[in-house]
Length: 116
Length: 114
Image (tube, rainbow over all chains, first blue to last red; front, side, top):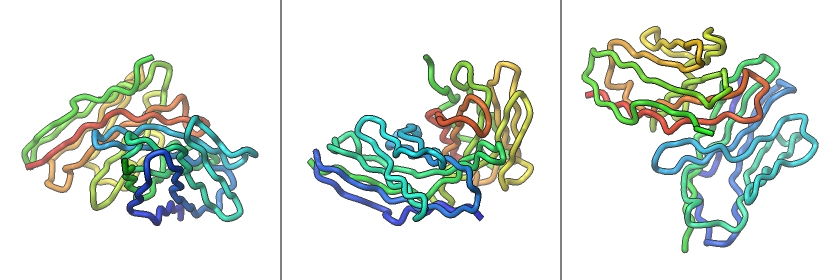
């Protein structure tokens, strides 16, 4: 069975510092995609970054980068130079691409608080 | 380019009533998926539509149904509402099933059942 684990219910980071949010996954499917989303208190899920299981390079999008360690089945999100606006819930999600299905399996999330 | 639009944003319904939520995907996107988010269960997949056909369904009772129109807009319906249906309902839009490297969500519809 597929499973996404986010072991950090809450994290604190000083403004302008970097922070790593952990995500591990469990799958025997060779083809999958990993997503990170940010959910502020307004409720909208904001897409941050994507990593495909066959991608050779770690994905980066601005201040966001994904530390993809396939053998360890981890896909940690690194946010550099944290800003107050980064305070939100962060969700890791996985989608199996072999089956052609489009549904995402989500972790339980990590609440990030940026301290001024 | 407009994002994913969900209407209404907020809804209050009484137990036993039914409700219809709407989702308009990003222009050009043909795959729409629905999710339910609650504090206790987290984010759970409801169903996915592509080309007006339901392709995939999560583990929800038959009171939850949906459809997709030819313009890719999707609706989900919940009949005989229960208190436990109170949740944030999110819709996600993708170009096509399985191959997209992006999946964009709307702002959600917050349903409260009293």
